[in-house]
Image (cartoon, rainbow, N blue to C red; front, side):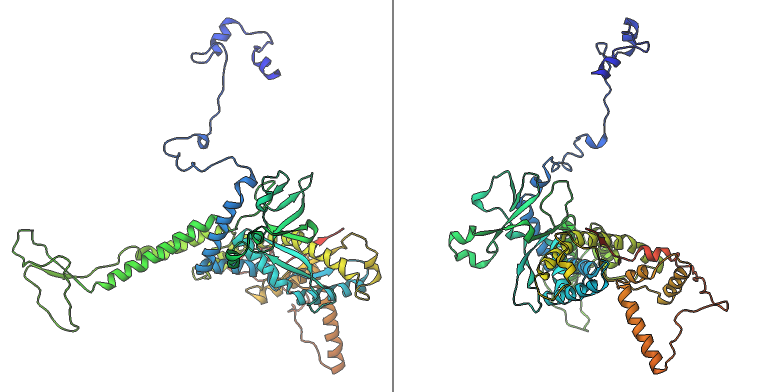
Length: 518
């Protein structure tokens, strides 16, 4: 209102005169001035009408409704199962993100308690194959959009703590037919009054189970309800308020189809050219003097023999000139576009670095490694911390497994960190020299350097102390591992023409620690 009144006044704060109104009036206006701002992207023209035909204003959960997610899941799974590139890309992504699995380091003030918890959790992780299940969950997020895990009790595992992770596919988490249409439930996720998940509806049998075709109707709608604290839901929310996920490779699905079609077309062209040993053609006019032949007639030619053609006819071959001439370039470009939605460089997606030099390979990997660190951080918050909390709650009930201090912690999660696999440097000697320099000028710590390799610095130093003690006992002198100058100081790192400084090495290393303080 104030802005409107101000627009009706002139510069002196008085109503405008007739002359001023006539000057400011728009073309054909009535004394009022309108300013209309336009955006080219907001215009609908005959040229872009079809391109923007599917743009809508659906809410995040309406846009990824159950039917849309079902179609995307089925197509993504089919492509991964039948496309070698798609399978390799999602496997590489899962292996690089999870590796051999995360390792727990407790950061409480009680060193003895820390060691006991770490050992017990490591034993339990091996018993339930935690690393393998995390890789499966990462694969499921890539091709199904999300993964669910139930925190259940499994007395059959070889560990004092019977906690286990039961993985279930996204198809089983849905709202049963008789409960659809409720405002407090979004496709199997029951929400409380603040919009937080409070429970999950899980079908007792997978909707795609072949046995359901002969099962009674009650088996089709039978489900269990689990409280939210017993369910781990791993997905990526691309929009605020989104509660279910879509496959990570969704933008690349049409590209995967085009890649396969182009490959098949190339093979078909080559086979067509190979199937026709020769063709007979003539340059004579229709009423010329060439001998008559039946159209599409086949003539069998014997090997290594000369032959005489009918008068006026010539012998030629079919050439597969297209699309074989651009096949390699097309595959490189489309694979590069496919991998972009996963922040994966081309040489990782294609498994081929023949076109890379050392510096460009390192540069492309920086974005990829940062993306891996983000995924690992998400896993820590959404999955690992939930698992650790449930494990501690059960471990304190096992007599003598954990120290008494852990039984008095209450509901708070102790300070801890997760270690992931490090990445080997392509030039170990150069990295070792740079590491010695950083340690010498106090720009890094042993904890940071060991964390970069995905190892616990305290455990490594204790092991090193044992080795040194045994070497002294046996009279063995340790071999110097750090080259030094005559003055006793480590030499400066060497530079070459194909490399950047060593800081970029640290920037592309995905191993790290993430401390969660209660």
